[in-house]
Amino acid sequence: MPHFEKIHPVRHAATDMFDLVADIEAYPEFVPLCQALTIRSVREKANREIKIADMTAGYKSIRESFTCQVVLTPAENKILASYIDGPFKYLENKWFFEAVSAEASNVHFVLDYEFKSRALALLMGSMFDRAFAHFTQAFEERADALYGKK
Image (tube, rainbow, N blue to C red):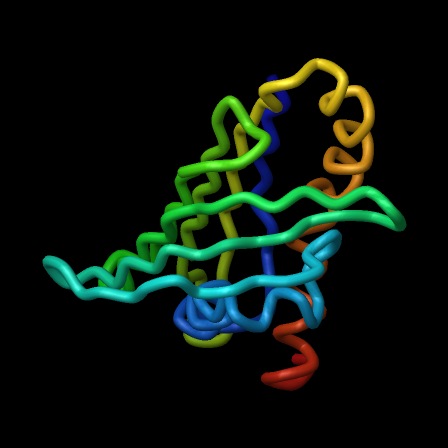
C-alpha cells in the first residue's frame, strides 16, 4: 500500500497553485506518466466543482486507464481525487494549498493507492513510485513556466 505525503514550498500564490492543479485537462502536457486525460462530466454542488475524468498513465509500452472523481473546493484551496474504476483496489489523492504570503505557498500532496493485481503492482509499482515522488516538482516547474519564476 504505497503512501506518499509531501509538503513542497513554492514561490507562487496558493490560489495560482490551486488553479494549476485544478486544470486537470492540461496534465498530459507535464505530469509524469500521464499520457491522456478526458473529462466525462463536470457539475457544481455546494460551492464545489466535481469532475469525472478518465486518465491513461503509462511508460513505454505499459499503459493503464482509470476513472476518478475530482472535487475542487476553491474556498478552501483543496482538491480531492477519488478512484472510481480501473486497475486499482483504491486510489485517493489530496491536495491542499497553504498561503505563506501573497506570492508563496506550501503545496500539501498526499497519495494513497493499491493495485488490484499483485502482478500489476510488481510491473507498474516502482514506475508509479518514482513518478509520484516527483509530482510536486512537476507542478512547481509548470507554475514557473506559466506564472514566471520568482
